[in-house]
Picture 1 (cartoon, one colour):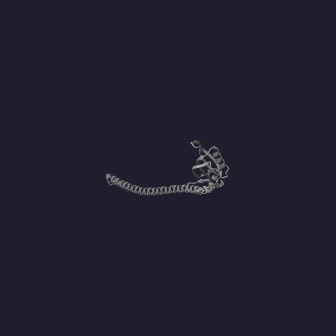
Picture 2 (picture 1 turned 180 degrees about the vertical axis):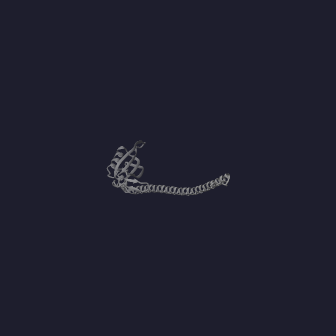
Picture 3 (picture 1 turned 90 degrees about the horizontal axis):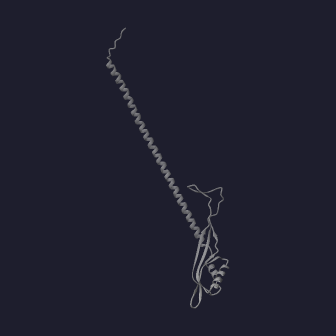
Length: 217
């Protein structure tokens, strides 16, 4: 049996082309939708990551500021402790009446005249190596190192005297009398000059008397 195709070839070709265009249009629409959804998803993820990064940066900035504040407070505390130790040390030492007693006992006669004198008391801190570890946040004492006492302050009391002596022998007796006092650790004659006058000669002197000190924790 013979069959005849009554549909023209051009019409059939147009139908095939039209169907292909429909499929292509649907595919393009689908790709566009997928691209839009993917773009929105990527934008959301990017925004979320940016927020997390910003949060971490803020936390890091806060942590750094806290560490700097702690280090500053620690330095202030150490400075206050140092000043407190110094003030405590300077309040101690030999009383003033003992100093006058020492000088008076060294004066054997009226051959010494004082023109000027100054009393100085100062504290010098002994150096010691600490056994602490700075972690950035706290100061921790190492477990494997025995705890050491805080640095001691050595009190040094100086009496600077300027005056005149009848002669060098009188000055020597005065210096020897100061040396004989148990409260005196050293006497330094800084200057002694013979001055000639019409009536008599005198020895002008400058000396420093260092009294024995004591260490205060």
